[in-house]
Image (cartoon, rainbow, N blue to C red; front, side, top):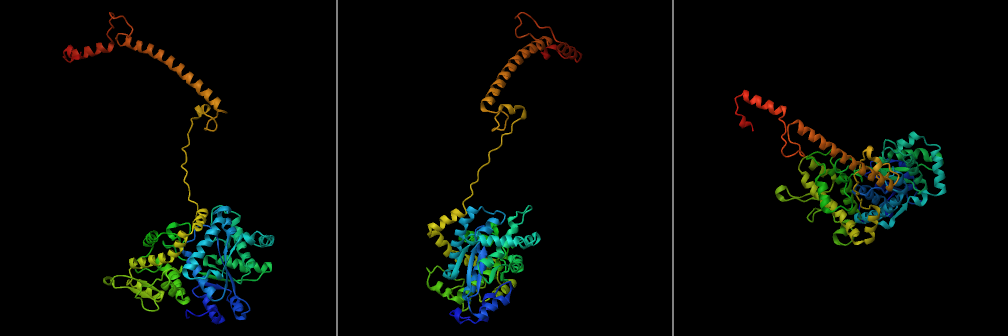
Length: 487
């Protein structure tokens, strides 16, 4: 498809192919084809995201696909689902979610611009703008009256956070997402394959309310850098849009990418799902040429070397002594070289890190130059202040009356505690005095028994020899030891 091809010149078949290419699954093709074939109005679609954790580069998969929808003449709405975010196991209080809505809108707009998607043809909708209306809530009650607990729980199993004691809000989530299709007035909902159960839930229950069944488009989920699902809550598995080049390089270097192994390879998966589609999109739309000729266009740099042959979408630059640079027009060729060990993981990681940093550079420049953008981010994701917990004072129950209840004791007031402490001090002093007298008397008795001169005895008084001394003398005589040597 030529870069200059406009949406007006595309046939309904070409539009359908552009809309559905590279998707993991399509449900309701006939619905899409019917609207395209009639040509009476544009196809209407929405993609929703709940503003919980900070958006990461895994979002580039749906955002790049949205560019295809726009090129095919689809009207696209981006739903910032604040109510959904609040309901998802209380991941964030509603006040914080409102700030995150603003941050998501700012980041997504910057990312769309970076990859060459015209944001003037996108409509951002905040969920609470219609989800709190009387009509929407009445439909929610109608839905609750017909949906079983089993179906609601099953539908949200892969999307709603699963805990041992789930909240009722998690059961409402799938129904609300189904109603969004009706209240956003769309023909199609787009999301990841992890949304499939919610999509089939909507197909089953919306017609029961008298509403039309919608089509559903699904993209594959991007594995995290560690091989698992890329998640906002796992910093090590994802790259944030504001991560520095150094952080990006470190995360890519630590990613799963065994030599010659294609399965569960987080780096290869990202190249396939993100970098090649973006490179192709930019080549087809002319954004690649604009980025090359206009450095301040707001577009990210291209992923190809200056000396790459025409048609190249991704280059791996390396010295001649290691075989020279490699240039790829198709992902399949890159994967084949990697599988055959003609492309080393270290070289691939270096090229991928550079490509990601090229994508993030315009986003971060915009962030650094916009005080408002920075304030939005700080309000949405305030730095956590770690408060050092005071060590709890453990009080012996015997002395609990010496402390107030606030201090963990039993005294009703500070005055009562102080009085009890004073009484205890007096008793201690009295006990100490009595103990000292008794101790002195005992010492005198022991001295007299041992034949020693009592401390207060007259100077000319001799203490009688003790039994122990006599026994020592007798024993020494038996052994023939001189008596003087024992003194």
